[in-house]
Length: 130
Image (tube, rainbow, N blue to C red; front, side, top):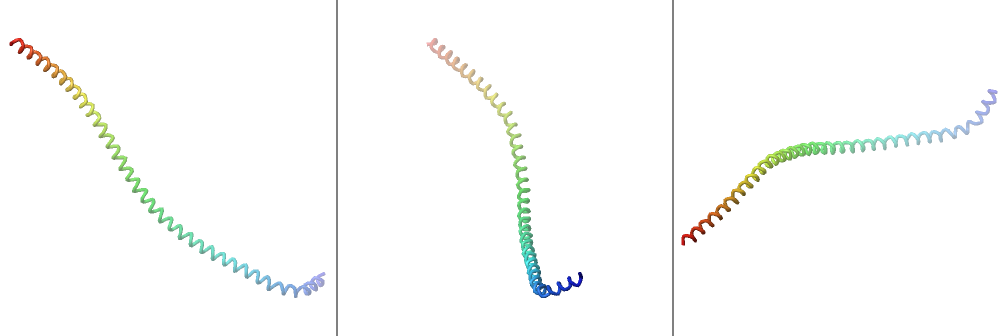
């Protein structure tokens, strides 16, 4: 059996010798394609790293602006709270002033009424005296 197998292998040797260069070309082209793919992926990775660096820089600026805006919003909130408290204190004063104006209004009405009555009495006395 072994001798027959060896004889068949000797008959196939010329065909195999033609296949070896084809296999070599195939494997070398596959290796070069893998190297090209690896180089392309490395270039893409560098591009992505550069883009990530730019995005990181942009986010740092945005984060800084966000902190500044947060501080400004806090200051505006504190100012609004102070204004609300001041307005609340002024409401009490305004109510007291309104009460005083109402009281003065009553005094003025009573005073005008008394003046009218007094003028009426003076006119009546002047008419009698004549």
